[in-house]
Amino acid sequence: MFHKKTHAIFIPFVLLLCSSLAWGKERSWSVFLDLSSEYNDNIYWQKENKQDDWINRIMPGININLLQPHMGINLNYTAGFESFAHNSSQNTTSHDAKLNAFINPSGHLSLNLNESYSRSTNLAEVDIYGVNRRRETYWQNNVSPSFKFIFGENRSIYGAYRYNITHFSRDRTQNSTEHTASGGIVYGIDFRNTISLDYSFTHGEFSSMWGNLNGHRVNLSYYYKLTPHTDTYLSGSYSLRQYTQRIDYTVYSSVLGIKHAFSPRLACDLNGGTYFYKPEGAKTTKSFSGQINLTYLYKHSQLTVTAVKGVRETLFTTLNLGLNTYWGISINLNHKLSPHLSSSIGTSYNKSHYKYVERSDKFWTASFRLEYNPITWFRGYVAYTYSTLNTNEALGGYDVNHVIVGLRFIY
Image 1 (cartoon, rainbow, N blue to C red):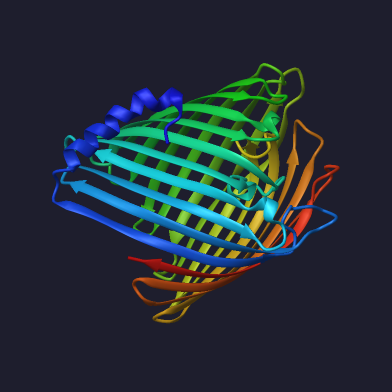
Image 2 (image 1 turned 30 degrees about the vertical axis):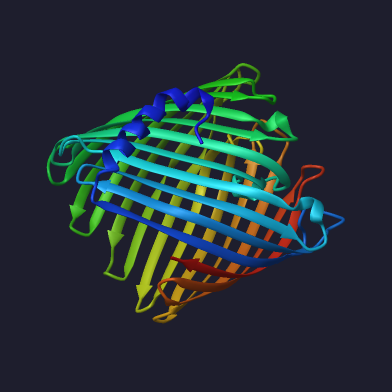
């Protein structure tokens, strides 16, 4: 489960936990089985020459919890056996394992370790921006140790490290490794006033055009509680990205925001600001960034609407495309039809323009899910998802329809 570079560091931590928890009284475990059948009208995520198929999946798994008053560990493992009705060459076995462990040696200090490992052929699982989905064997390992020390009311110091490696079997030019170390302090001056300062350093190694990356980011924020139902905040950040094979750049940004609960049912988070993008040897450009998030609760329903515009990085995923400007909107509605029957419907649209490659993407998705949970050990569902990618990249773009019927058994 652990990559060789992190094996020696974290295995003793886990072994210490397991040996201590083996004698604990609070131990629990459960096994589960997921069965599903999916109709997919474009199994290779292609723009032309689409191929449809029925995909049947059998996914057994186990979940283990070991707890003591000041320490604990959770292990979860799922194996997936995927069978295609007409394209048997795509039959595959996948693995997904997660570990979460903690030690609280005192009431002020907590130590945590999280790790996830996955191996599959469906790259949509690691592709968070909807670009270049395809069927290819990959594996990904993410290890994140962290600590937090509380030294007063709303006052703490924290630190974390993330090691993330993504490896593809065929398109190895997209292999990447991430090392990110971060830390910060939250200092509550009084009931109304809080300031925070955090810093992160990222070292990235890429097999493609980027070479190596050294990145720094500093963020300073101030929070003021205007009323019991209203919080305001002001933050500013500075980011520096230095590449061995690409142009370096800096990004400055400032954001002013407000969170307000109009009632127990309606809440809003609104912020806006400006970011400045400065590539080395070129002029600075600036643009607006902001976000609005509305949440409305009514009886057995929850509606969430989010609109966002800004700048982000597409790195350490299926394609390493670098800095891009984007805007998007998403709408999601969850409704409980009865004590045992629930539904959800959602849609989202994102448009991205990349700074370092000649590429622009428009990604849209819509989904519906109906779930029936009459007893604790059984769940059944039917789901539909549509997604489409329009891009100016020569071989990119697709539209896909999925219909899935599934059963889940837990013991």
